[in-house]
Image (cartoon, rainbow, N blue to C red; front, top):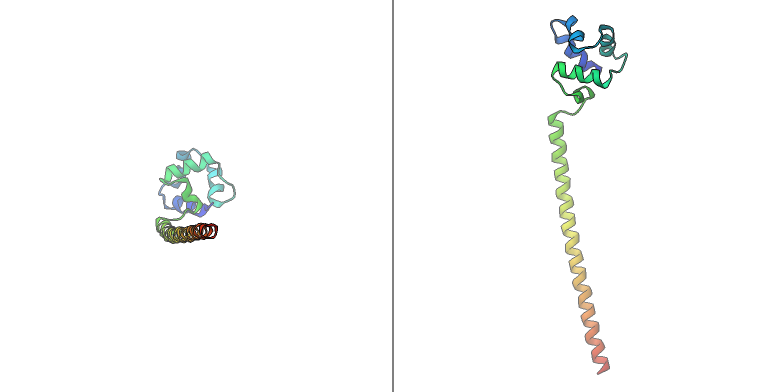
Length: 116
């Protein structure tokens, strides 16, 4: 958890003394949270996030949109490569089946010639 993010949001506020009361957390507990001395409960973290207009994940260094877009593009590229490999593999299997069928037909023809 990134306690610094809570502290930065807190430091930007004009009336700092009102924040813990508005959030519903004791002043001493809130001070310990922003110093990183204690882990907030899920409930407290949700209250803090709501007060500052953030998602809870914001305090856990979730990636920003730019990082996510880059990851999505990378995954799309990898998917394209896999799709090409699958297509190539299917083509190879199809050719192998044709070869096998050719050998089977040839064996049938040669078998009939030997009997007759």
